[in-house]
Amino acid sequence: MSQTGTVILDHLDVPIALAPMAGGPSTPELTLAVTEAGGFGQLAAGYLSVADTAARIATTRAATTKPFGVNLFVPGPPTPVADLADYLAELGAEHDLGEARFDDDDWEAKLDLLVSDPVAAVSFTFGCPSAAEIARLHTAGSEVWVTITSPAEARIAVDSGADVLIAQGAEAGGHRATFVDRTADDQTDPLSLLALLQLLTTTVDAPLVATGGIATGAGIAATLAAGAAAAQLGTVFLRCPEAGTHSVHRSALTTDTPTMLTRAFTGRRARGLRNRFTLEHSATAPTGYPEIHYATAALRAAARSAGNFDEVNLWAGQTHTLATDRPAGELVRILASDTKTALEKALSRRIQSC
Ligand SMILES: Cc1cc2nc3c(=O)[nH]c(=O)nc-3n(C[C@H](O)[C@H](O)[C@H](O)COP(=O)(O)O)c2cc1C
Image (cartoon, rainbow, N blue to C red):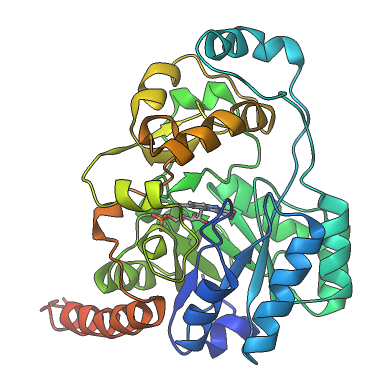
């Protein structure tokens, strides 16, 4: 199928987007470094107040004339309290827990902010905004990028009016973007990036941004060859000096600890470095986002302060050992040059046509 372009993707100097990374790592400085190096920087608005989101947009806009994006969490329904009781009792036996409360991450107010103070693109995870919400953002002049993890979600996003699909493979660090998070889905392997891209290019006709486990020029080249218009990288930027990554997380990323998918910290499936908390609680953790996220927030903060990486959510993708502490702009330039080299090398392979 042919792929239409978008204003942003068609004008990027390098086909690299910075993944939004809520919870600390995303900063205006990191967004700016990637943007100024010719990539597409995105700010994460998840967990932030509306005022802090507005302030970060203002800081970024004051420092560049280039386009950048802002990412929002699409809220799901509250979890019935009874579904969480056993798990909260299990955690509560060893830890002081916070209130397992629900909120929608200020969804309406953040949308209103982005309609009144538009950015080049608004990207989404955890669901698809309604057609009316997407239309509001279009009227404000923004592109709408929706993260999807399957062809079925891709069709919903396209039917709702999304301009770009961010295809998230199983390799990705952080939360899975799935529209509906179900414990039953733990019995099914999530699609890896290359499998997902091949399925998408034969089922939807929308520009794709590939994400999950991409940390080298060769990785970017592979996703471009598989039909993506750009690659979105997260974990490889976590150790950059411009990132707001906590020191405990930074130093854990220098180890070769394997990653795993877990609901233990937040009640939503996410990939992070394996540690004692994930090993002890992943089997029993129920679906329950954001309630479990709030219940464990204080224990995670205390562990961070104490330098105890065994009780911190160390989000990371499968290629985290490739992350370095290079400045982000330098990293983008190296990745761009390595992408070109990898594509040329691939093209130099002999392919005999019959
Ligand atoms: C620390 C961290 C925080 C993340 N926060 C967000 C977020 O706020 N919004 C979002 O859409 N994706 C978030 N993600 C997922 C990324 O958008 C992306 O899918 C992922 O980083 C790609 O895999 P990689 O980390 O292997 O590059 C996060 C990922 C990490 C590692």
